[in-house]
Image (tube, rainbow, N blue to C red; front, side, top):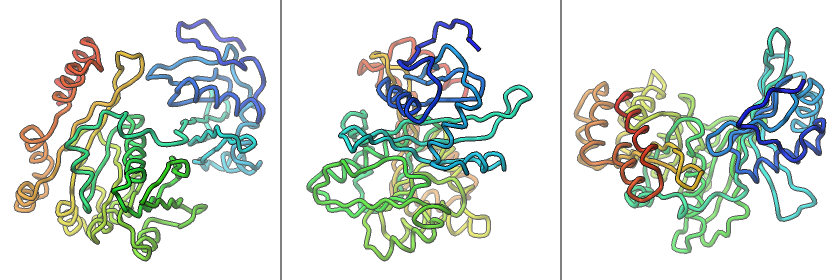
Length: 383
């Protein structure tokens, strides 16, 4: 079925070909080269990609059920993937394209679901291209206060934002910087579910990186086993790619409390909501004691957004708060229910709000006046 014309059509080089293992990989490589952040394939719908914050249609015709079946079998490397989908089980997998071991390697994170298209059963595949080598920190406009806080030998650093805000990119840059800096003798152990970034092409100097995938099909079954294994390996840095569940927050706090430098992320929209979410994620039966440990070991909260930049791409805008000993003591002397409000007040007084970051980005020539005005209006209506 041919789809109607759209001003956002951007047809890929292989448009019109059926989906085969070869053409799917060709499509993904093409999307990576266009700097797409997201690719979507759905039964009986056109192929779509998100490029620099805009949705673009990549195919003139819609995909057929057989196209999606072939795609699932290829990335899952088994026909059993379709069986899992039929049973209502989502597939959250990694896919790597490395042809003939040539220098170009392409990595992707995929989420595949059984879905409805009208009244018919279908398949929905969302693909997120990943950097083959993490983007250097020097290219990410990171504020010096953040760099200073990240250099602390211990404590928790939260890198936060909504989906697609560049959290993984920033964490990758932080880890890469520590690996490449000859003055840093760190032993970094990362646990992810699944692994998103690869570091084997980073030219590490005096630091080491070990990556473990967490989950039923991973290297270790859960984050408690991961943390126990970490403690036997004398790490300096422990990285959880993301905290989504109470047991992960518990393990992250315990990692920092045992004297390690802890780096993780949360899906939150601002600094005060990060504080609220971190407390809420602590297991209920241990919330009071874990909340105290959290504050005692909290180093910095960074919340990031991506906005259209003057170069036609997107640029990071960050709000952040470093946690001084004095502010930690103030929190610990107050009811937990007051912590988000106190965090917001401290952010305004000593940190960087999004409003401050927006004005700096405009002064630096990264965003236009229109983008600045729209973003400031958003802040006013959502404060």
